[in-house]
Length: 622
Image: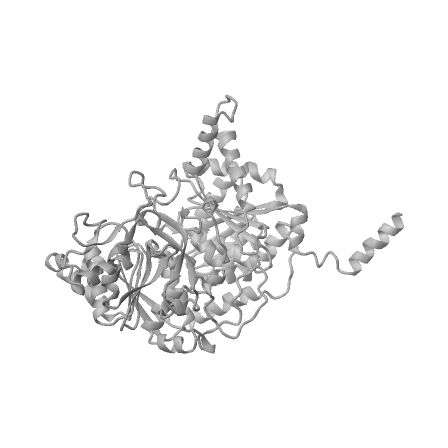
């Protein structure tokens, strides 16, 4: 019997059985791999991009990857934040209002997350307090340790198993980003939870990537390692030892600096990774791959993976190379009220970049504070007024994104009026669409006081009205949120063609007010058409203006589903129109020229297919 077993074992080896071990075998053992990304020295250091990039290179190896973002603030979710607090609020399919880093995860990994992929202190405490009220703890004293820390671990384990891709396969790797910096008092329960967690799931299934800053004072030009030494010492004192130290720096890390970090932070030199500033974030996965991050994680987490060339990374290289060699320019005026902080419109900017890259144009975004376009600014600060109008008039296209509140709305309508009359390509998103309706009603239909009831409850021409779904008494999670279906009402629609002649599309919403359906006929008589409506036909979702190169408004937020290789059709239409290419694109059946295509656009876990041309997918088939 022993001889027979030995013979079978040798035969297995001779057939390459162990070398051909596939990642899918993970499901037989049920072992999830966890990668915790922490940060030190300062916040906003780039943990989100690094976490996304790590997931990207692992996905390129054929693994199914999911991601969780932990925010230590006490808010239940990001829905009530001002954009100046943490940047934009990203909206998911299920209506979750989450941190913008989840947008990075979705764009890099081409996955669809849920609201529970964003974990906050508020959610954890709410969950534990609800259990205590139900008597689940049997009268015990409820404490941070073990009850809060256990709840954190249970949440992570449960959410890591939720499929995030269309194939419905359970993920094999979970990348967890812990927001803030190590040492913050609010993140201590999470650090303690993962200190315990590393022993529960065993060493082979857990590793820690620590992101730190290497400052380079201009006075000396020397790269300083002391902040990194201090933050690693603090992390180790809290019970976590980093397996990789990723150093954010302005220029490439010098070998002597890398060796110094290695010596004082108790890691091998190969575990010190340089993540210096690059011209495009699409280069970060390539930067990590070049320094052997994928190979290290394979060995550290005992993940046998195929070593053949990975076409998914080839796609990323093509994207990064293309972004460096773009010669033609295209400028878009972004007219909004949060223009002082670019993260307020993070997904909008990314959607514009994806579209510009698809048509091989270098994007220039001209940020314009909408309040500076108003006549009141001309009287108070004439220089700002004229500078704002100069920016607007010199742009190739105009974009008015979503927003809330009355400030700056008159300036936005002035910009829309100019784009309509001058036949400049225009895209209005959410509030931008609503204001386009108000502007047309005032200046074409002659309703001088036309407005949204959000800004003027007593207007005689309420062209935008309060929607009946939300509860005005409570602000959080009360809007029309998440993925909803839009039906195209006509075949003669530019946007429908851009969507691949789809009968309907599923896009994400975040709004409280709607175009008044009772006044619809007045607009359509004058060529202002509502070409997209909801399933019931009560809510106006898409507008188009006749006899205009590109005047489109959408009630939903198409930027949330834009991907680097699959740009959002409304944004792609804006860039094509701004570059003067839209008519030719439509004539060709919505196909780009061969020089504008990639050799591989697959975002799946096993990207093997190659294409010769990029065609916008029909979202109705998703």
